[in-house]
Image 1 (cartoon, one colour):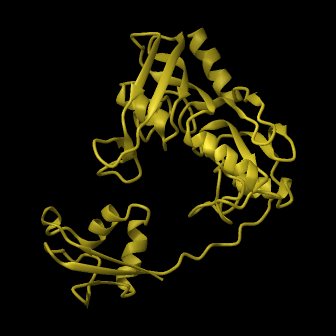
Image 2 (cartoon, helix red, strand yellow):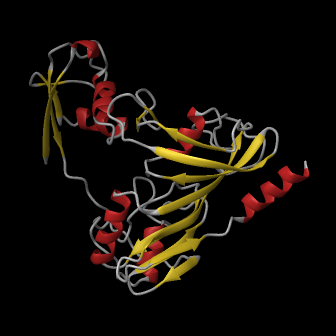
Amino acid sequence: MEYLSMTVENQENNLRIDKLLSDRIPEQSRSYLQKLIKDGNITVNGNIVKPNYKVQANDLINLSLPEPEEPDILPENIPLDILYEDDDILVINKPKGMVVHPSAGHYTGTVVNAVMYHCNGNLSGINGVMRPGIVHRIDMDTTGAIVICKSDQAHQNLAEQLKVHSITRKYRAIVYGNFKDDNGTITGDIGRHPIDRKKMAIVQRNGKPAITHYHVLERFGSYTYIECQLETGRTHQIRVHMASNGHPLLGDELYGPSKCPFHLQGQCLHAMTLGFKHPISGQYVQFEAPLPDYFTHLLQNLRKY
């Protein structure tokens, strides 16, 4: 059991307690916090309250958070598009619609389920039972190259390379609008959106530095085909940076228009190039994930029309 205490600040006066807590503890869903309130795990000034209780400045809130129950994550015989494999690492081309690691609502059909089967359980354990072998991730509807580690030694080495931003990560994307310049760099600290907790945003406080370089590959009038190179790797970085620059990704209903003129499943984004020093040999290796069919067909249509 984890115990937390917090005092309501003046600017939070008269907020519903479930809203305040979801703002203060964004890693927990509002529905889960409501359940904790109803179960008596959360008190205000020593009293049990309801989820719609309106807090007052200087209220003392005490929380008892039960230890999360980790479900059994089982190996699944899911085909993998393998770009490279040796005794230490596995590089795959992740398809659209596949989640990288298990999370609430996604305990099967993930990359982790697939690599557990493929590697017969021989994966690094640094990130725990929910993320064996996972060093980095890409979004469910983003396709492309990711590396899986089979040993803790490989994992530690690659994690350090990620930390110092020495890994090459180039993405291909199609965005709305026509860029003024052929090349550019977008900067801006990225953190949780202050209002919509499902989104990330460029923020002034409590964000992490983020840098995205872009290069125009083709122009289609209302759309542009670009390559992005990450200098950092924040959650939704390319999606947030491009939207902030007035060029949201085609198909990205979270950061762009709610209606897409093409039949797409999520954002048009592909992790094409992944390069790093091999964690054991020390030699630089680089892998290319070919564009998925939907992406090449879309490019063909844009070139045609």
